[in-house]
Length: 97
Image: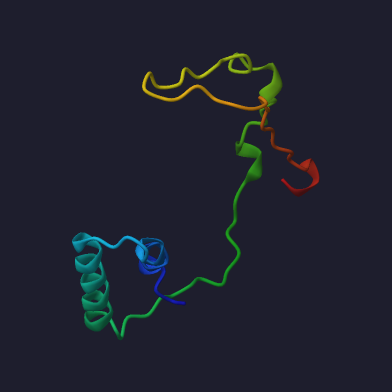
């Protein structure tokens, strides 16, 4: 739980269980060596609330920017997409910003 630096590496290892390679085994050895060497390390957290000035951040309306109608070109070696086209959007509640 406290090994923040190894969270990604450890969580990715089970995805290689069906088709392991030699490199995956050496990666596991590296993880275990790090755990053995750093077994007494601690993580310190500052419990104070940071004093951030939210007024320095500029509010942005993304619908009127120059980037709204830009289309990304797919790589030349990709397959033609099959199915319906969809637009992914995000909603931001301004009360919680």
